[in-house]
Length: 119
Image (cartoon, rainbow, N blue to C red; front, side, top):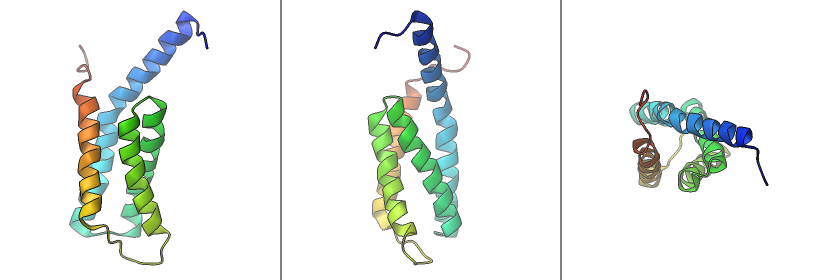
């Protein structure tokens, strides 16, 4: 597909805007993860975390960040399976925590490569 120079510039700007949004996305995900660690697994917190992970899984892949998208998808799928059960408590254990660390590492890898705002 041949894109006009204008379309290429617009796509590049959109890609840059997405990359610049990653720190805020990480902050939102971390907010819910920290709340879960403090308060325990609840349906509301799990649903909010799942929503953020689901969005990240889809958008990261769309912008070519396949590793990041896959890490978010793995967590999203794990949460989805638990949310379909009738349990009032979620039991993710160390597997979920390790996947969260992998997600953070993937996000940090992208974020640290970004130019600072104002540069």
